[in-house]
Length: 64
Image (tube, rainbow, N blue to C red; front, side, top):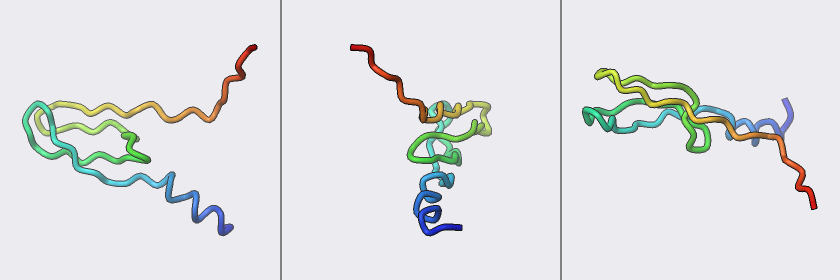
């Protein structure tokens, strides 16, 4: 493991976060990376917080 990997790994590690269910108002634990939900999370009432699309590492070349 390199020193750089330790610094970059913190941006890839999912962080638990509580969000409020808009349907029933109960807290739902979701896992996020840089504010984006990494996997679907379901509330007890059946409401599902969908996972966000990951950031693309591809860069599109602009045509002049």
